Image 1: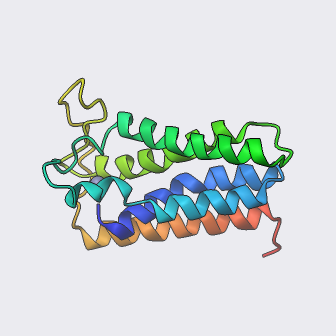
Image 2 (image 1 turned 90 degrees about the horizontal axis):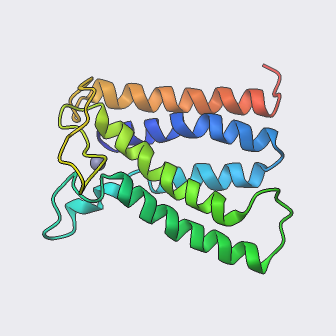
Length: 164
Ligand SMILES: [Zn+2]
């Protein structure tokens, strides 16, 4: 998928997470999660810019999602050990999940395209694909973006009980 499509999928994945965070009283974490997921929606495509790394190879795998999760988890653990924010869960765990889900949302977007994603790299070379749309489809990219924006808007209205 292209940037708009990936942003759309990230927003779709974020909508229920953000809803849950707001309802649990962690509004600031909801904003942080949404911001990070949009900011890093294209992170796995960094492989376009790294010489020698094939596109949709190592950075499009659950292993990479786990590594990004570990980096985020380390940051969360560090922050959590410095300041007590009063959460019922550890910021290390939260950070890991945030990094992991951010990457997986990108992989889900690419799974919609015929080229697919090798989730189990380097253990397997199987490309998982739903083959719903070509990556360069303008209609599909805009449709996903629109769906994502709608999902977040709907989740925001319900989570904050905004009268409509
Ligand atoms: Zn990609």
